[in-house]
Amino acid sequence: MALTKRQRQVYDYIAGFVQKNGYSPSFEEIGEGMGLSSLATVHKHISNLEKKGLLRRDYNRSRSLDVLPPRGKLKQAMQAAASVANLSAAKAAAASLALPLVGRIAAGRPVETLENQETISLHDVTRSRDVFVLEVRGDSMQEEHIVDGDYVLVEKIKTARNGEIVVALVHNNETTLKRFYREGNRVRLQPANAQMQPIMVPADAVQIQGRVVGVLRKY
Image (tube, rainbow, N blue to C red; front, top):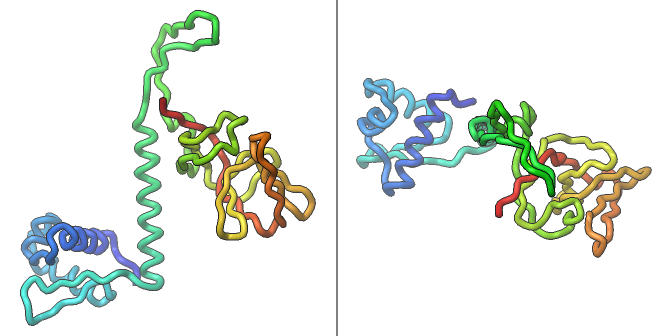
């Protein structure tokens, strides 16, 4: 049984209230917190959440709501919905972060000032692609100018072309950032560091999780 959007909001409100205060909210507090003027509507939502195994009521005590963790298909559905919501929020944040583009510069030459000021945002890099961010740890890609502490923008994909920098899951237990090369029935994950050896594994032991489309660095 899937949750409606409003049921999920009520569940999240109650769970957040319990976590903050150490006890469950009253029906009046739920109504006030959710902007519901009818206690009958609050009671209906509570009853539906109870039927779906997300709440338990003890009728012998006040503030009797116990929040239960989702299970089975309902848990998977709620996790999927949360992932979609987080991705949408990340895309909105990327689109809203815009900085002035005031000119172009080459080393050793003066700034070329733009007459009409432009802006550049993360959305200009990611476009409408399904993109997430990872923080880099280690120096295996330093010769590609991707170093420890950088943030890489990764487009979520399941396949890659030879030479692309990818996020790869190896043997279902280790994730790595390397250049991807398919060589027959094997895959070479090539570091960009002369001191490191490539990772050679059977092709079926590698799952591509994304490819790098940009790098962010803080100074």
